[in-house]
Length: 234
Image 1 (cartoon, rainbow, N blue to C red):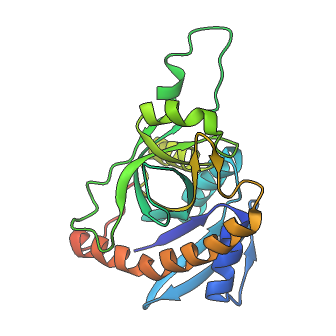
Image 2: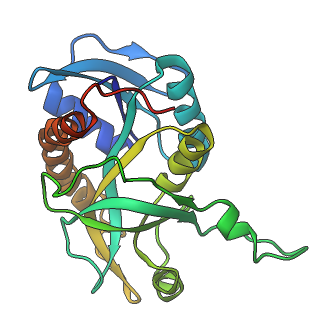
């Protein structure tokens, strides 16, 4: 199965390169990429960069240039304190953007337009590793504590910068996307434990990315087992 693994944040990409020690790193318009073998399976690792704009462009670039049978996004997210535990891996089933502000007309239809429901029916259960299926909110900003109650009401349990853009472009292309994000830090209405503490985020990101990479072949094996021939879904 031809699989491209998209990595977003700089700290996440640094952790991936440290874990895999790639020798042949190639440039792309968005960042670096390389091919690595894990448990006898070949993966293309692609650094898309942080934020929604670069994520949307990079996703379309990946789909156009690599034609993957599966695109995977591995990364971190900020979890809502009391909603999800530190280190929990989220299997994302829905995304939405929460930083769009409309002051000239009817805002009600805009959030749903940029929301995406990820089809996970192709993913066999039971899952190979413990995960929480859930909703992830995205914005070009760290999670404001004052926004948590509203995001909870919309079903979210965590937030990041990129997942909603990746999912939206994948959905427009009819492409198969698997998003696995682990909670690197908790945020409450009183504040975030990693705010003004980038060292804490980087330290936890290292462990998270190593764990997600280690588990990646297990997910692919399960998918192949169900697919049989692993025919491309596009």
